[in-house]
Amino acid sequence: MGEDRDFIETVTLTTPEQVPTERVSQYSVVNFAMEFLQLLRRYDVLKAQMSERGLEFGGKVLLIGPPGSDFGAFPHFLAREVPIKIVRFKMEGVLDENKRSSDALREGFEFARRSSPALLYIEKLETLAPRDSVQSIVLQDEIKSISWSGEEIITIAATTRPEQVDRELLSLYDRTYIVEGTSIDDRIRVLEQILKDREDLDVSVIAELTDGWGFSDVNHLAMSLFMQEVAESGEMPRENLEELIEQSRVAAFGDSKFLEAVIRKTRGTQQPELSKLSEEYPDDFLDQLYLMAVGEDYAETQRVIEVLNEGLPLSVKDREFLSRHPFLLTGSAEDRLTRLLRAKKSSDRLHRIMGRQ
Image (tube, rainbow, N blue to C red):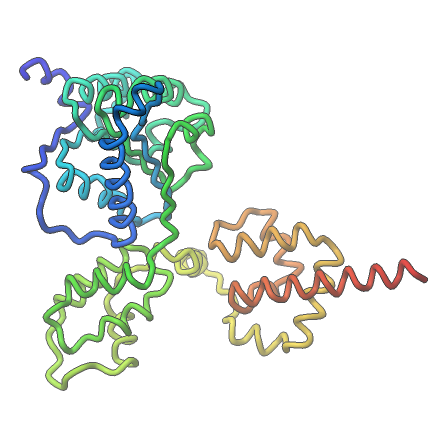
């Protein structure tokens, strides 16, 4: 394939034999890949019937998840199990200032066609084809032109910011898998894989203590703990593990609350601790405050609570609302929703009573 040298700056090609047999992978993402593999095998059974009816199997997958998600586990699993070659865009090649990104995208798809059967892996979809861009239009045209049933190309795209991608582009994918963050199984499995010989470390406790951490964060922590000397006193108690995690210097950037705390510290400001906020707002008083907020603007109160519960970045508008209602920062996500619904019922009941008078 001497002519494929033209594509060397745009894509890389990995054969199934070159894919590592051992890999620390996010279990939930691998499960999604296993589910999709069953779909591929089902297509093999139904291929003739689908062809007779003019039906096409696109084989187009969209992965959406938070920063630190192990999207790469999906193509890695398929490359080993199908088996199939992986064609992957080089970010530095597509985003080269001396080359048009739209041309680079077309080259990548052309290379995938020449290499079929192949899996085309598109990382950072929001960067390669941002909303309202020429690259987005080109990518839409290219994705429409290929399929597994036609060109024998599986297309897998991943993004942590779907809101920065055109909806028309998102809608072209047959299957969408949403990675909602690391599950307890994700954390236990990666910790077990890396720390399997460390009898002094209870991975189930470490998994509990890292709730809310991203997959890459847990992976970094496991590697840090692996390099720690083995404790001679046997299995560490929970409080020692907490201290060990704090001393690891591994930043839990997958947890939005951690990132917000870092930003506050670097700006020289500090928010009151939640425990102190709870003391300032007794339980009954909190319910009254929620009732006042709902009475003022239920829709806005609900929206800000959803932003807090999802760990999304706070806008200027959100901060202004929270400056008037700081009590919304207290409690868990479930507690906020419970109080919100309770306040809404009370507010509706008061309106009904007032309406009768």
